[in-house]
Image 1: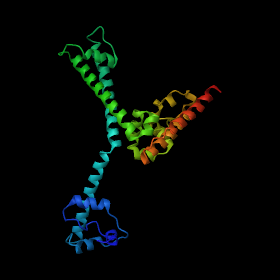
Image 2 (image 1 turned 90 degrees about the vertical axis):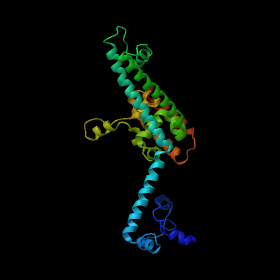
Image 3 (image 1 turned 120 degrees about the horizontal axis):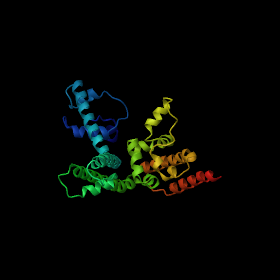
Image 4 (image 1 turned 180 degrees about the horizontal axis):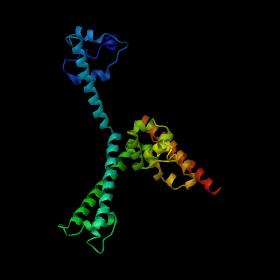
Length: 279
């Protein structure tokens, strides 16, 4: 087949009828310069018996192509990072909830009962296997250990997936931003104003309904640039941080090249904002 013929060939050319995998590959990789009467051409090529058969084959091929694309997307590094950070947060949330139950329950049977995960871990080390409180405390310990292991995975993976974002925000916050956006590509397309309030959707919707003031920040509040700035200037700090995070996400998605100058620019901007506190 010549170059001109390949450019105008239908996706069914050189594909065996019923071979959905080959048809899906042809659909994903192929293109045509102009529309054509594809059902008729597929019939003439012997790929199908009639127009209805063409559309049945097209449906099967496009569904196979979609399944392949979804599998590849789910296996992408940023999606694996999203699963890890969400699982980490889930483990920690459940561990904290069970820790409260352990403290309340232990308080009814032990004079020296304490609170917090540290107490639950101490209780879990006890020898009383028949004590339901000890058993529950061991659940807390297991979840806390799993959360720590997942945090380690996030801290290793985030700099590989988004080196500039991870350096600027820290690996865990970078992973949470990517998760909230639905992926690194999606995050890279968001304006700084949206990045600024990721994680504050409830407050934002309340503001849009006229029931609350506009939120100044979402999850980026935990960043030292925001949290460490005087409350009156936190809005400015959040805007500055969000602007640099948006740029970092774009660089990570489109080139992946590490640019330390972004960190320096953010540090200089935050320093100027904080200087206003003492002016």
